[in-house]
Image (cartoon, rainbow over all chains, first blue to last red; front, side, top):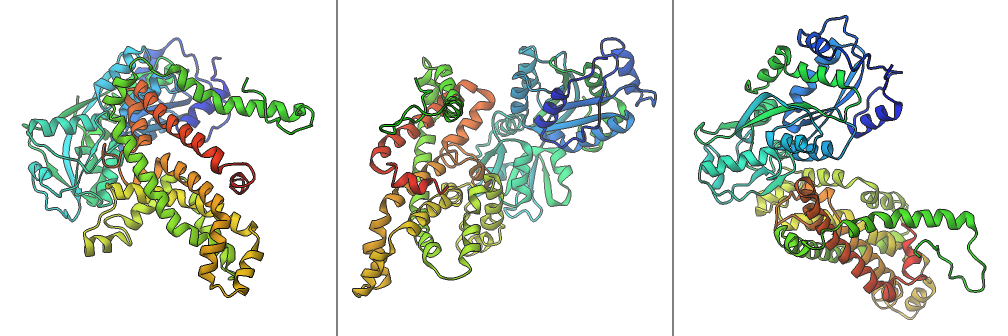
Length: 275
Length: 279
C-alpha cells in the first residue's frame, strides 16, 4: 500500500532531467519485508513473477553512461513496470546532490572517496564495489600532435584536457602524471570525463587522460594510447542505496542487479575490470 | 523595511494592495537568496578562503574579459543598432530577430555553436588555425569571444530602441545644413543616444561578467587563463561549498558596486531605464 506520492515521482524525474513516461499509478509492493528475496530474484536475472514496480533515479558517474544505460534497459525488461532514470555527472557533483537530499535512490561513484563523503553524511548505506577502471590517453583519430607515449603530453604546444581535480578522473590523471614524474600544463580542466572526451572527439585538444572504457566507447572517433601499468592509476566503483530512497526494495534490487553476473558481462564488455 | 513597493508618486495615495502584495512578494523572492548568502557566508575565514581559491586572479580575469567584450560590442554593436534602426531594407526585421537570438538562446548552446564555428576544427576556425595558428578555445581571447557573443544583443537592443525613439528632426536639420550622414551620426545622433549607449554598455558588461555556459563550453576551464569568477564558483561548489559562497560574495560585491556607481549617473529613470525596458 505504500505507494510513492505523485510529487515524489515528479520530483525524481525532474531531477534526473529525463523525460520519463510516468505511466499511471505505481506501487512499490511490500517494501519492508522480502528485500533479500527480491534481491535474490533480481540476482538470478529476474524471475517473471517479480512484483517490483515503480520508478527510481540513479546517480552514476559519467564514465558509466554507456554501461549503465544498457544495464538499466536490461533491468527494466527483466522487471516490467519499473522505470530507471539516470543522472550522469561528475562523482563529486553527484555526491553533493546525494548529501543535499535530492530525491534520488542509488549512487554509483567512480571513486570510493566521493562515496565516503556520502556515507559520512549518513546519506548512503554500505557501499559495494562492482567494477574497476584505469586510465588511458585518448587522442583524436588523426593524432595531430603525433602522441605516442605519456611523456609526449609534457611537450610544449601539446594541448591536453584533464578532468577537474575534484572529479575522480582528474584525481586519477594527476596520479598518473605524478607517478610518471611529468609536469603537464593542461589547456583545460573539464567538469567530468564526458566533457573531457568531447574535447578530444571534436579535435579541440591533442590529447586527454581518460578511462580506458571511454576510449573503447568512443570507437573510431579517437585513438587510445596505453599508459604503462607501472605508472597507471586504478579507480574502484562503489554502488550504494541512498538512505533517502522512497523505494528501498526497488533500489536494492537495482544495486543487486548491477552486482549480478549479467550486469558484470555488460561492464566487462565495455572494458571495466572486475572488482 | 524592504517590503514596501515603489510608492514615490507625489500626491498619490498608498499603492493599491493588488499591486503591493505581489510586488512585495517579488522583492522578497529576489532578495532572500542574496540575503541568505550574506548570512551564511564564512565571514571569519573569508580572507583565507579567497586567497586559497585564487579569487583575485579569477576576479581580474573576469573584469578584463568583460571589459574587453564590452569594448568589442561597442565598436561593432552601435553601428549594428544604427543599421537596424535606420535602414529602410525589408531584411532588417528578420536580421533583428537573428542578431538578438543569443539573448534567448541557452548560453551552453552558444558555446557549442562557437566551438563548431571557431574551434580548431570549426567551419571558420580551421582556416584561422591553418593560416595564422590561431586557436581560440582554451585561451583568454576565447573567453572574450564567448562573452561578446552572449552580451552583444543587450547593447544592440538598448541602443536600437533609443535610436528609434530619438527625435529624427535634428538629424534632418543636420542633413539640410549639409552634413554627411556619418558626420550626422557622429555629431548629432551619437550624443543624442549617449545615455542609452552607456546604459546598454552596463547591461552588456554585467551580462559578460556573469557569463558561464558559453565560456565553459567554448573556452574551457583553467585557473588564471579561462577560469572566470562564475566558473570558479561552479568548480568550488562541488568540493567546498563555503568557498563557493565566498567567491559568490565577491561577484555580488562587484555587481552592487557597479550598479551603485552608475545608477545616479546613467541609469536614471527616463533615459536609461526607458530603453532598458525594451528588453
